[in-house]
Image 1 (tube, helix red, strand yellow):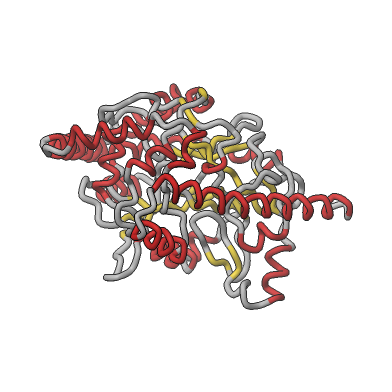
Image 2 (tube, helix red, strand yellow):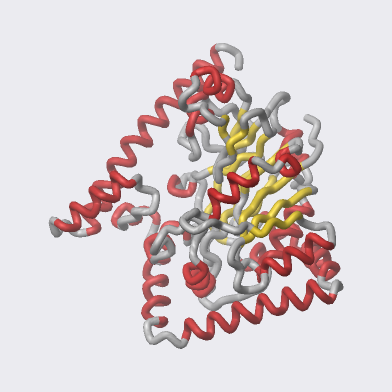
Length: 397
């Protein structure tokens, strides 16, 4: 399958210490264009991005977010109207803590699309949750060789996807996957969306119901054979605390709490495939840092984060925060159903949780009830998507 141009759209705030590694890696595997929409940077990341743009390595947009708007949806809305961004053969929306890990061929994004069936227009690549690997202290060094432990394949809470796709008419960008504007209201647009040939991370077809509205893999569609998204949502415990101090792109209050950490800090297995790029990445970053302006800005960002973590450590509550994260990270996968993880719940679900709490029902009991309800929905989706795939196979699709 012909490759052509490969583009990333990402949003960033205060990513200075890790920016060069993330950018170098994705350029190394074949992304020739990287668009970064930055907002409200305190560590000088925006100045770093300006310099990288002058060096021809990124295209940087300072995302001035109107009051009341959320940075991520605002950037996506601007990005989908940016013809210079969407005029590409392949596009993916990714975060700065995500690395596209291609296992096909030489590990390039070109090898990924060549490994997919002819006519593929989208690859729904599943997350691999990567944990703290036992690291507590803030550390500005390389992510890929420091955090090498992650979740097993069957960790269902980590089955969100990011989609590498060929842009199409009436494109509406999303953080997990694109859609066609108006597809939910217009049957013809929905049919056009569902007619696209998308595959999973093993190159197997995705079913129509996923094309319509899905953003997570199911038991019928999970696949890590060709590619996965290594999602470093926690890094070290102190890095996680810094992440909460920064805020988040969807303005969710209290998102980065110990429960979120327990879900995303998975270290059950060694997943060190990305370390094979370490030497080439170090050389590329060293070459870029020969630019004195960029090196100074990078050093400033690292110093800013170091000073910020020193300030947070001075808080009398800091030891208790670290202890809470350590306890959360020690919760085994099979016990996560006892934790009340409200972030993915719809507003109606959150209201119901608040009602149950007001009645004095313990959080662990509520959590198990929520988990049982979610599991029923997951079982239904598994069965539906399995039936759709069987019907597709019978038709020779």
